[in-house]
Image (cartoon, rainbow, N blue to C red; front, side, top):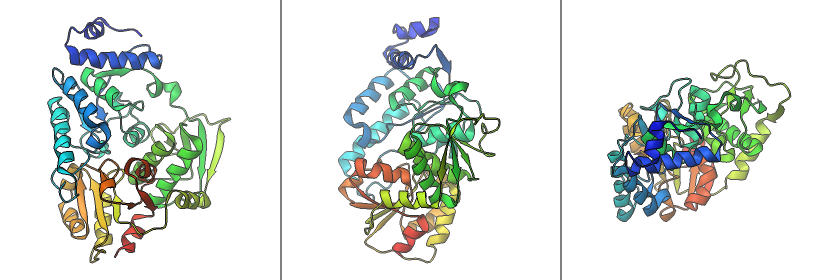
Length: 389
């Protein structure tokens, strides 16, 4: 892989051990994927934020990297393992909370924004079409590639941090035009609403793997695209998709000779019955990916005047930035359950407090059994809230 003179100096340690370690990571990635060189990026988004997922080894890595380095581009964070202001209400152990705060201190020392969200494009990190970025949250990078038209590979946490510190990333994969073309056509019938699009994403991810799907027969809005991207990324590692007449790179694509997959109502019903159980939940968690302002408003209307069962906790997961934009809805939702910011059910240590979690997110359904030892109930948000009212 070609390196400029400046990049060679960094690799030789002339800019300090933190930048040297970052360059070593990028060079290793570049060699694995046969990248010819590095390219500048305009932003980064980092995973590996919750103490639950990175542990003491992750803290040691962040301490090492933050001793003599700072990020060179605007950089945001994925959700952490708790709401920093409401962790006691979430029943988070104090030992966990203390280590989580250390992680946030280390990221702050690196110059990273400490707003934590899996939807940075709804807050402060909004790439433009054609921007080269290094993002490490599977649903966010899929949305950025597909809906915003930016360009990123499916980065790991350390690789995205290295890219943020150096302001560049290896040039391979989805940075190249030829790898952004559709590889399968998905013809859809009978899909409507946020929950259906989550089921659709799961069905397509499972059936097409790491493909680049081209969708026909849907016209999703931003929230439907958000939850569909998340489900596809979790079920099949989809990092880029196109929707006919909707996403910025859908026009002019050559679809001749591609396999065609048909998805209809029966397929969605099969997904829901396969990934969920029919049990009473002790936690209902909405917001995977994080809720938008519009979703917060819709949920506030659904819960207005209702009282929930005292046996079930309800979390509305969003970013603190989004919550600040709809204070009346936050207050209304807090009367029904708990608005928890900068965290989510997947990366919080709910296995110590809950057994059955209900959600409208197929991404969450994919991860909750393994990461959180949960049985999952999979239904639409209105259905879930009606269950306990």
